[in-house]
Length: 488
Image: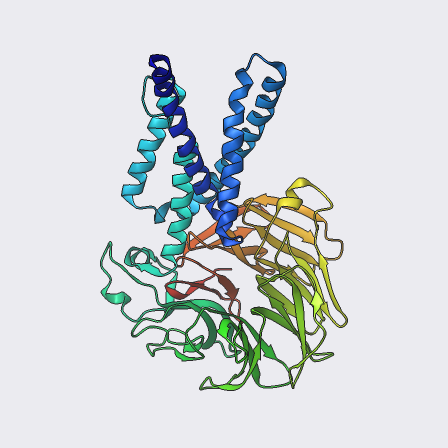
């Protein structure tokens, strides 16, 4: 009985360590919930925990068990390497979202894990998966939480020359340091009127009293009037396309309850003149977020957020055509209707697109280096004159310059994790891109390969474009629409 009691007494710290490892692994893998159901997170944590337990066999005197233990140790190193990558990638982007109490808890768990590794006498053994998981889960949960909040410190951090020209909330002037408020709805993408003094923009978020109260809005740049909005303030609206042969804007909103009872999308036909109004509305059962229009065949090609197909419709009647099964969804689209070609950003480092006939060609589609295989982008732009595409790779912190016609990456720069929307400025030979989570717009000089400007514009900066006269940039974020004057 005494021997059994001692054995159990020595065993329980290891059992507790296994429970803590499983908890840490589940927290490390929480990012999977953005794509998969929660049971996948639990299953991934169970696999990593089994590998962790089996790695102890590396010290076994039996050759077969020792070999199995060494293989498990290598697999465990792979788990830790990936988790460290997640922590290193998300930390500079989301550290601002982590509260002080969580930093304290992460620090305590790290010290405990370090003590365990140094084999100090302790009744509690903690693996490094625990503080790593606490950090990763804290960063990602902060992202989800902060999308619904706006910090007055961010408004107070805006510095000249950047200025808010359309505010997401009318009460920023009363902000105090440290104050946090509901974000309300804020801008995502913009269509700029040719005269340059008015914009139409799409939105996301929840409505708050006095804030943006619709899915698609119009506003005078720098005006004091509240934006005039149409469409229900639900989920997100995204794509904006101007039809050249009609004085109409097409806007897409998804996550709506359709007449058939599905969570689908609506395409609005909007007036381009003042005041903004809905002229017609077309329902779809698919969550369509963005698209491009080809005037030669009068087809509007729509990308689904389900990443399963392109859904073309024939205008002006919006007659559905046969869907085109392609596992691709666009995060950003630049289409030249005069040339009949453009780029759509998504998947690896983007695609070349045509509308007559329809064609979607992946650029550097993984047939080359490992870097290209693991790249993922949501932002790119192209220069039709030089036939070059500029694509950010936020998960690897890269900016790629790609030959449009061959798909070959001919130059690659390190620009930092989290870059998203891209705008190429050919006269200045600059590439502008947003850091989505840090809320910054970066100016990158192509000839020198150096950053030449950085401006804070508000968190979740989804979009940046040059004004029609190319004298300034307009960028969106949770503070609203920010204008950045540019010097030659």
